[in-house]
Image (cartoon, rainbow, N blue to C red; front, side):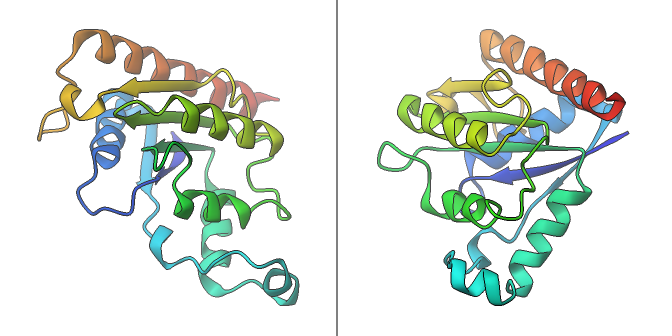
Length: 179
């Protein structure tokens, strides 16, 4: 069973993104073990000088969790047409330490629109060497209207796309582990 670290780009306790992470967990079944990263709002602002002197404990914990995962699932909204600041901060803490390099990453942007934020995050993940960030991604517009309170996808087209997305992500993790 593959271990997946899921990161919600929202810091809200009851976010739409967490609902989609739960939906992915249900769709993946016993093939993956998904744990949700809970430290996003506790990460200090990225500072290369602090990192050089010794990363804070919260950052070391993040890096450890990323290193232990076979893959990473990022499910994010868009804020002000871009990547949420807290998610970008998390990613910035990994630039010099390389946790996303050669790591399978599945990206879901679940927002009202999110096209620009989605494309920007794909570019960032590609720069970091995530595998294959540009191919294993899904944009779900009007995301709140397509999932219910039981974390069930209520839109058949979205359910089909998400099911294919999960299949592709599992295949990518298998392929990477065999190489």
